[in-house]
Every structure is written in structure tokens, then in C-alpha cells.
Image (tube, rainbow, N blue to C red; front, side):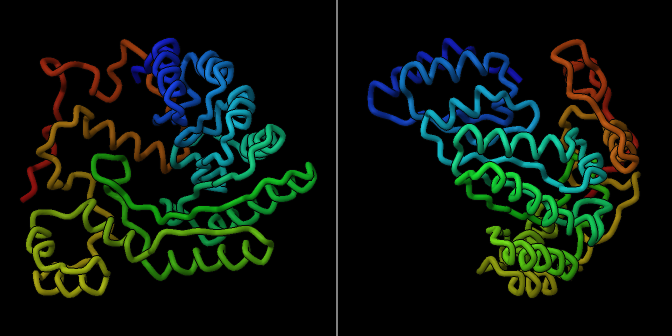
Length: 315
């Protein structure tokens, strides 16, 4: 990460404020910016109205929450991703349920009026019971808000998990539609009974994402035949091309050659193997250091980078 300095960002913000513009802070991990407190205090001092794209739950400085509320940010988005601590370990989310409760309480105390919490359904190793923990956690959070008499709206956003290429989960199957729908419906019904708003992405669209994420050149013919973005249209096109869409629901051998194996991302295949093993064992991988790291291979440089030779290039 190469963050812009707070002074440079404040100069740009000052120009925007002079034009009557609202400021938006956009980045993968806004709260990790090394000068985040200086930045938000500077924005507050100049009277800027500002918001952020999304926030990490940990770390999340209280000064940032307070500045957001005073900067007229009515809503913030947080991504616990999973309600089960076991599942959060699988996806390397070093976060406890107490951390989530604490941040929600602090956001309410700071004056934030709307909290959007993002969760994934169908994560590797997830069970029905673990999916149901989303509702239980949401109810705990609602009680926290009620105890504080906070006028804060809680919204759950649920998204089916799609394994992606060049990640440790590229070998794992995507959960089947019937399981995803059952878990989503269960959470939706139980949460809404308690007055909690639930939004979710389409399971059908997520399955199409799964096909696009890990398909090969055979999908070119399918794409040429698809006239509407519906699962039924995709199934007909896949059948016409002789492609079994169930491949996204099957686990792949670790030595399988993928279509994207020809792309050198810099990350060694063996590193992804190790990270998959660590994920399934619930072992945490610490964040990347800022310098002098050769763990995954991406920071070794083009000349000295070790490339995996174990996988054959897929057609």
C-alpha cells in the first residue's frame, strides 16, 4: 500500500470544499492509513462534509467515527464477512464478535445513523448452523443499539461466496444454489421478524459469476450465445456448447492446471497451496510487512521471482 500523504489529501480536499463539493475517501483500507487521524481532523477543521467507501472493523479509531458523524456521514459500511469466529479464521479475518459489538456501539455513540453490515454465505466449510449465526449476531447488535437508545438503522447485506482465480480458494467448490437459497431465506425470515432489514445478491447472478471466475476458453462460445443475463439463458448456452456448469461445484486437484496459470501474477502457486492449508486449519496469516518480504514471491522482483513449474498450462 502506498498511501497519499495527509497533507496532499487535505490540499485536494480544500480545493473541493472551495467549490462546494462533498469529499469522498476511497480506498481498500481507509482506517489503516498511517495519518488517518490527522486527515479526518483536518477535514473536520475545514468544515468538509465527507464520507468513506468502507471501513475495516479493526482497527477503527473512534476519532474517525466521530469525524464522520460530524462530517454529516449518515451511513457507514462494515464487513465482518462471517458471524462465526471459526469461519472468520478460515478467511483470515482476525476479528472477534466482541470487536464487532464494540465498533457498532461506538458508531452509535458517535452519531452514525445507518450501519450496513456485509456478510458472505457459502464460505468454505460453512454449515447451516454457522450461517444462522448471522441472525444471532445481528440481534445482539440490535440489542446494543436499543440499550443506547440510538436512532441507528441496521441493515444486513448478504452475498453468496464465489471462489476466485489466483486465490487460495481457487481449488474449492462453490456452494450449490439450493443450499445458498435455503440459508439466505432462513436468515432473511428470522431477521425480518425482529425488524432487521436484509438485502441480498441474487443466487443466480452469483452462479454466473462463478462460471466467469473459473471458466476456460470454452466460455467464449457461451458468451456469444447469451442474450440475457439470466441463469436459464446461461444453462441453455452451456448445454449447446457441451459444457457441464456443475464444474464450479466440484473440488479441483491441487496439481490441476488452470486456464489462468499462464498469467504470472507474481504470487507463487505453492504459496497459495500453503494458504489454503492454513485457511482450512484456521491458522492466521499476518498482514504483509511494508518491506523485505519474500513470502509469497510478489515482492522479489521480475528477475529473481520464482515461478511455479508444477502446473501444466490448461487449454
